[in-house]
Length: 64
Image 1 (tube, rainbow, N blue to C red):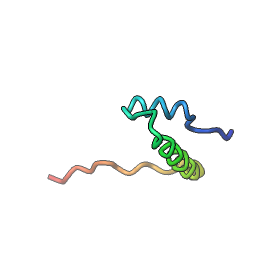
Image 2: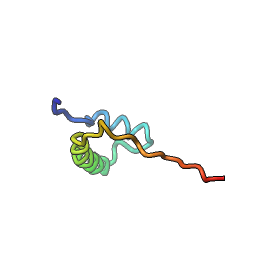
Image 3: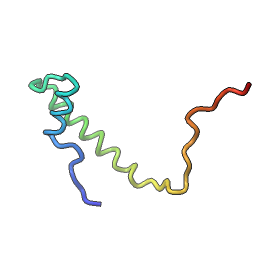
Image 4: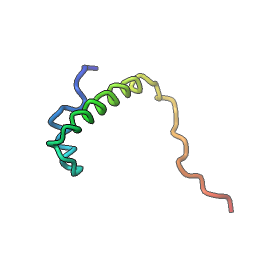
């Protein structure tokens, strides 16, 4: 799998703007760094083999 930046700075700014955040704020750069670190931490989830697993039931109705 090729390594690439999952969220470019331009895409992050577009998402932040769509969410109503002030894209001129200096805090947005700190948020971008935090989001990048969080996404990098999630990369290990791609290594989990779930091919033979069925998802759990999200809802179990109460017996009548």
